[in-house]
Length: 153
Image (cartoon, rainbow, N blue to C red; front, side, top):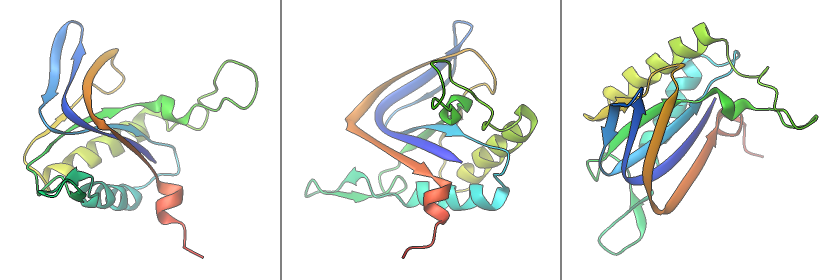
């Protein structure tokens, strides 16, 4: 599982000319899921997401998490995070989760996030989405479950 987390001033997602999700300050999170991902992995990724201290405190240090600042989430499913570009110039998406599996875990992640904070918006799974954002910083962090779950040496 991969999360690309962008700290934003605002973000929104439109489908067919209509806004389906919109937030103010918080995170835009692009979510990639593969077939080996589980609900247990999703729980660990959500826990890490919620605990990230990348908002500035009163001294200007990145020391506050999303809950501490009353931030919002915009969660977007993006299978292209599993693009394999090693061979040729056309990416392969064989490592991306099947639509059924990925959608189930995407909805699980949304529900888990809603248990943590009050404003959780989402895109349309499999939809042709137009995502816009104002990256705050810019500040972008990539979480990969393989790295999160790996034992430190």
